[in-house]
Length: 295
Ligand SMILES: NC(=O)c1ccc[n+]([C@@H]2O[C@H](COP(=O)([O-])OP(=O)(O)OC[C@H]3O[C@@H](n4cnc5c(N)ncnc54)[C@H](O)[C@@H]3O)[C@@H](O)[C@H]2O)c1
Ligand SMILES: *[C@@H]1O[C@H](CO)[C@@H](O)[C@H](O)[C@H]1NC(C)=O
Ligand SMILES: *[C@@H]1O[C@H](CO)[C@@H](O)[C@H](O)[C@H]1NC(C)=O
Image (cartoon, rainbow, N blue to C red):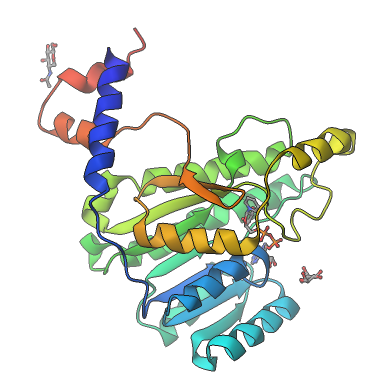
């Protein structure tokens, strides 16, 4: 019964949010971390196709960053691309200051930089979880309308492993669980009501990039993982780049989206504490409060 009540709340909330208007990305100042190659580069490319004002690429790979900057500049124009060489773990303050010296506002932040290296759990957490948390905090504080900002979008690159149970690369997986929690929590409609900062997670399945070219699993799993990789549908970085644009424009805040074999959908996980539920609670409707009692 109570589960049904929550489910109905969820339906009501979903249909209510669907009415939101499309966000225009034209003329926006955007920052994409880890955009020297792979998925980040594809997101930068697709943002530029949408007519954003500028894409600021932040990447620790100097050589590849310069190559990508020059390629994108020659396609879209020199003033459209800026490369800042930096490490998301150590250089947030420096990069943030540098950006706000040249631009008065950042509308879109894409936390995309990530690594998969099971020999380096700390580096994995620092890059995939701690850095996106701190970058989100810093940019959100400036974006939020209730503190004088103009609203904005924060898109976090999660993964299907953010909500899957599977036996592979568990340090990477746990780091991606973290970024999912950040996105659905900070981006919850309750917070959006006052901040007008849309926070989203994108959860891709296997994508053809350098990350997936390496041996991703421990030696004893190489054989089963090869079969696992073959059994699933892959996609190009560009398909993920396009999906990022789609959800920036029409996605619902606090929502995780999956993309598998190029097909975009709402991620199938979890139970929602809906806006409806919280509004009822605020109005003193005591009835639904027990929805989380299991019996
Ligand atoms: N490839 C996939 O199948 C897949 C699937 C799901 C999620 N993802 C996620 O997508 C994102 C991009 O992955 P990719 O496949 O394009 O990987 P990639 O290795 O091709 O590119 C990652 C980029 O991030 C940069 N980077 C890494 N650590 C950094 C740091 N500390 N500071 C600054 N830049 C840093 C790298 O230099 C590189 O240019 C990652 O967060 C990854 O976890 C990838
Ligand atoms: C930078 O990227 C290139 C191209 O993917 C890669 O060959 C090189 O090893 C990277 N360098 C560093 C320092 O990560
Ligand atoms: C909630 O309901 C219980 C009984 O169902 C009642 O005793 C309690 O006072 C109510 N609390 C509020 C805040 O309305």
